[in-house]
Length: 475
Image (cartoon, rainbow, N blue to C red; front, side, top):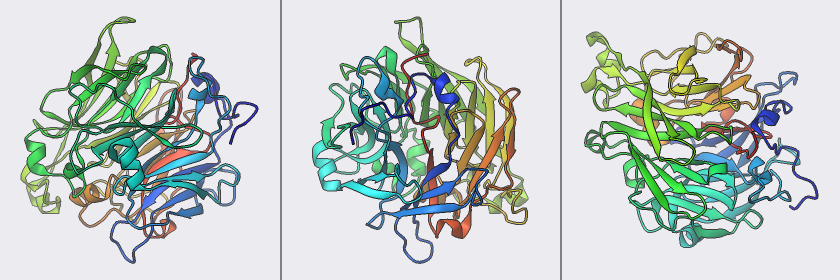
């Protein structure tokens, strides 16, 4: 729907976004994974208004019409990038969430604007149409940007292999415009992407092909170094591959990308799930050498694996028993809008770590909490007698940086690799000391179990935008 004035949730700069009104609702992707009676995947709406009587409760539910989509990541149809002077779209509004079926390749446009507690499906792109027009399948990450809505995909339209890549959708009609890349160079694996929008540089990362993920982790492929371990730099305007950034064959599963929100800067962070040398995880920082130089990438933070005593090895999932250790498994990271703190989720050990990245090349840990975890099964203070499965996984940060939200599922088949007894469903929130660092779990906020009607929970986005949704063109 066209508007006469820019959407009030669009902000020219990250500084202006950070002083915007607090979020009232969180939108959470939920999916069914073979537990109990079959359910349809759904968008859950959680009240995050601390002054509301239903704070911490699921207050809205929008079912998808089919079974088996496996909702995963989602994204807004429009965001603050619409105000960029080089490609302005001030007439569009932040209204629809693209709920993408990672398994089905079906895309749902869910209207959450007029009544956030009663979302409604406004449009569906069926898998056959999406594959035919985009050339891709298994849509993963969506960002609103200069030419429309960009979506990364793990596979081709034809089968279970690569190359994956980016599809472009029209801002106004949501029609699939086609394949984004004009020259992909050596890029074959795909996963996440984002950009340095004022510098015309787009960065992509690598997970695996649909064959490598849909039935769980393939240990032989992992040990052979066949999962993703590169970043790719593209020219955002010409759509041509410019540079591959190699991490080394021992580093596997180069996942979430978080570029600096300050549009003057050209650096960012990526979490790498595991090293084949010692099962550690790591945080890397990419940066551009000079204003117009090449990009380089450096490992800036290591998180070691945790050894397991011989008498406890039987408690490990089969995939980890030979190693007698729990890998951290960094599966998501998120950068606060002021670029001060990086939040790191360790799906294996159950730790959520807060790093001060004021000096991007020298991160410093300033906070940590533990929930769930393969061995620890740490409980939430709201239910201290309830051992938790799964771990802090998808992480989202409020625009002002004062609240951080986590959900506990990675991806159905991969949950089963590391938590074969299931992960259930839970969501947690912590208050942040934005001056010194530090995180404190909110004991009032713990939707879990039946609150999510038998579904598991994945990515969260916050009403009006958050730290992983918007791009800005002014400092």
